[in-house]
Length: 564
Image (tube, rainbow, N blue to C red; front, side, top):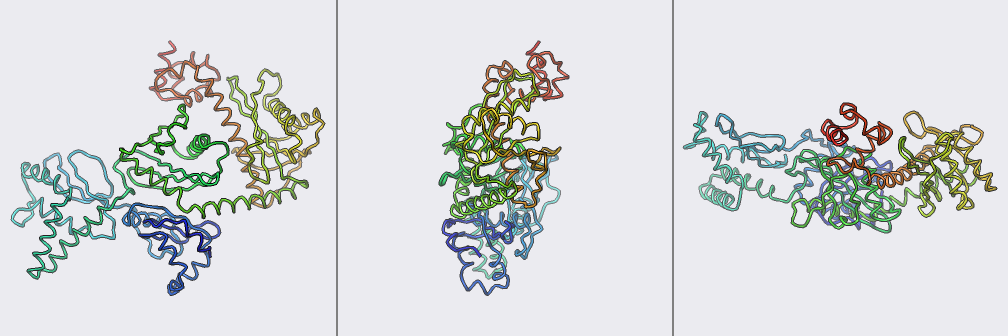
């Protein structure tokens, strides 16, 4: 059971909470009007009267929360998360994956229909009201709309005229605002029904009013835009950046994610690198929303469609909600982050036993270049007790005019440059590669009279970390998963760092590239073309059909016409 003190940073806001076990699996999802108050109740002995609570409490090792704008939002999101995670301690599993809307539509043949739709769709001559959560009865409202719009003298008109339908559709536009006047009329009907002892009728009108009042609560689970939108919230604490991402697809909040990461250089570098890494593993979206305060520090040459909503924008409240989610549960998030660092230290200590030498200070070398270009970057990532130590990161602009095999030559240049400066600060060297790369590093050490243990980290055909070898080519069998994962993270980090430095240099070079002066073409398009054709000259000589193999027909035509 976690310590109650971890709840102290949870806000007293509506939202959803997720209890998790020691492996991080979600075991229970709950909603609350007041997250802090509701979660604190689990530490009350009275909660033990619940059959499931004592057993669940024994398994709770951590939690996360999602701050929302209203109880209504919390209800909807709770249902979605239960359906997604299927937690063991949640008893009722809802089958409803979407939340309906009431639609009034004027058809092409001038017929008026009132029906239920599972999703909102922007369409001509249609009015939507919703979404309607299934903890409220919306059938009375549907019946009442049929009465108001499709009846005459209390009878539903099935074969109404086009004139009738058009007139009622215009009336529906005003009715479905469900404003103060409409609600006062409902209040009056309730009072009249009670005076006449018509209690069923009073309940009918009261149910409608209850639904309308409930639906008035501010909600951001659904938005009207049909674009794919990601909203990013950022909050800095103790050199750590807490990130919350809200992903909207087809107008629905489909997913939310939390990240806790170290700020290694600056906030500007962090956000740019985070976006690059995030969209390397996720599909691109139509629009990215980020707090306006970051507008000046983000790079102008990124390929992302970032919007920084102003206070006047309807989207600004989404950004503020993401920011609020980023900074809630600060203590729990930082404790978890520090716990991960402790596990990393333990894994690093076990790594030393596998290597049969101290490994508190590890450096890993890698390089990055693209065929057909002149830029080559070599780099080194440094790890202290298993954790990246940015102070000793280095990158080098390498000499490409060499006759030897490119990769091993670049490993020699990188290692020689680095070891000249920081050779005495290293316990172990790991090459991102095999025997050939290790021998180049060994050659560099001989020139500098250094003797540091060298190992190679080899990738498989899927470009994933596969195995560790020593200088004699012997495979070091890593049987413990946490040690293997540590090595994989190191390999990923040096690869990320060197590629990021390469891309920066490449982007600066590209600024003078005439292709970038063509409207609609950005650095990523140029990189794809360059990777395919090998040089700028060959891009210029390519036919329109050849260009279409790399980019869209529209862009290929523009490039071809500019080249000829």
